[in-house]
Length: 83
Image 1 (spheres, one colour):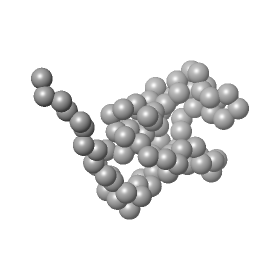
Image 2: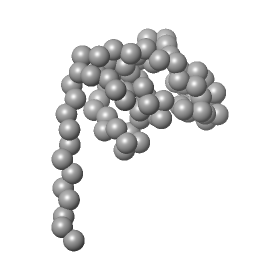
Image 3: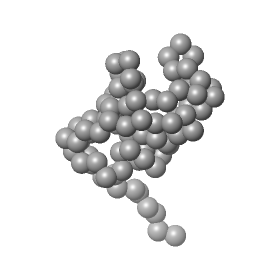
Image 4: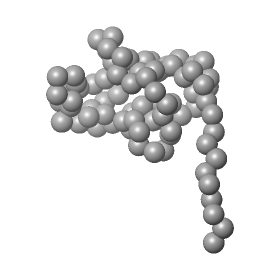
């Protein structure tokens, strides 16, 4: 779960690392975390939404204060076909 500084829950779903399903700052912060883990991080604009922001939610060039909770970790087996 990711919560932005004002307490608004922004993302509450499964994220596959390396698939660009989250902003770069969140991906970096999740590396090394374990199930049940908690981490509070500040994410600079260049690792978040830069000068674009998200209208009516996150201003341009915003520094995000994000709380991360990891509920569970599972590995995905990639289906690799033989060449």
